[in-house]
Length: 464
Image (cartoon, rainbow, N blue to C red; front, side):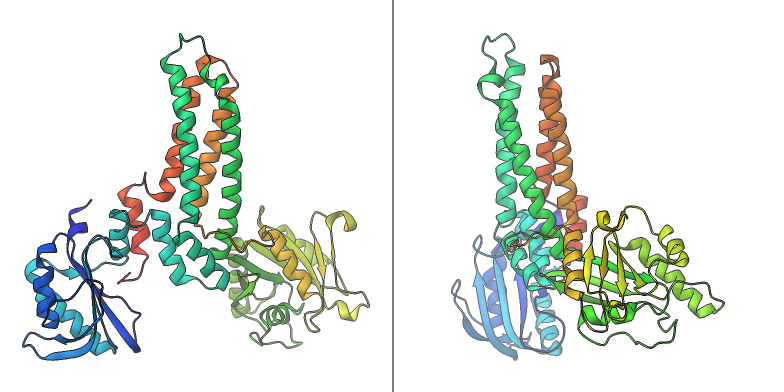
């Protein structure tokens, strides 16, 4: 624990701006002997633990700055695991700043300072009130942009993700014990690994990890969403499609080619997954300097996209210019050909698979203007995202969690390869199991560097 992690800290714990209620929170750290003195200086009386008391919030002269509810939570039964005081008063910015400054002035002799972003939750982690995955879920719950994401963050905060990780760690530790026992006692006639079904245990661990990784991927989708870029020649209906997907008139639609000069972005939800849909300038050769800038920005967005929707006019299909555009799409990024204006061709809205059209891409025929086929496109985006129906019970996950799970998966794969070799490979088997365990432990924070903690908690808001 760093020296600053034991300082008494204070911050406004409610969002900036005006509100009905504002909260100033103090966590006392190592200054536990000053709790009673500071409480009396701020409220003029002693407080019963975990009891709401209506009190004045006093300035240095003993006059009331505000009146509200004071709550005192003795350690370890508090959010941070330390003695905590919360002053819940009126939510005006000025009065909250006055109460905050009064707390700092009254606690200066005890080293009370303003909290850094995420420092209260960091204290909760360091004092074993939350593991690291749960602490991250606090920020994810605050930042959730959909109901599904909020529910999944709540499951992570309740420990669903952590319990699955701990179960994997326990199984891995048990297997490590068997392997290392064989290494320590090679002269024993009984083969510990065969008798204990070590290969079967490893296979079960690997399958459990596959299941956890699948849920984590779903959770990452809920948290991050997909960046979907609408690309194509001018006047193929990109802006109309953005409006149809969003259900609102966000982009200007005219029959004049080149109307969209810069990107227009909108976040929509499909099955709770945030889709960041970006309408871009039409791709064509032009002498217009402003349009050239817009086209350059379009290619920049395409390079960063998770999915590219290549819009075509259904009446003309794939033209020579469209072939040139498609050749520039980055490799590895899923592309869906969207044949818009199908209402003008006499063909119904439909999704065609690559085998049906002799292509390596799926095609969606739709009419953005009429709304026909929009549901088919939404389903196709869900398919590309890998979303599974009925996944409401997933837990929210971050990219670092996926990286750690994939790394653990690689180490377990190598462990399985060594397990199939001769006895000389047992030490490599044991080492891969140890490395897999370290990766899993990094998710919950049992094996995590201080640098990583600094990055994670610095992204929290002040007061949380």
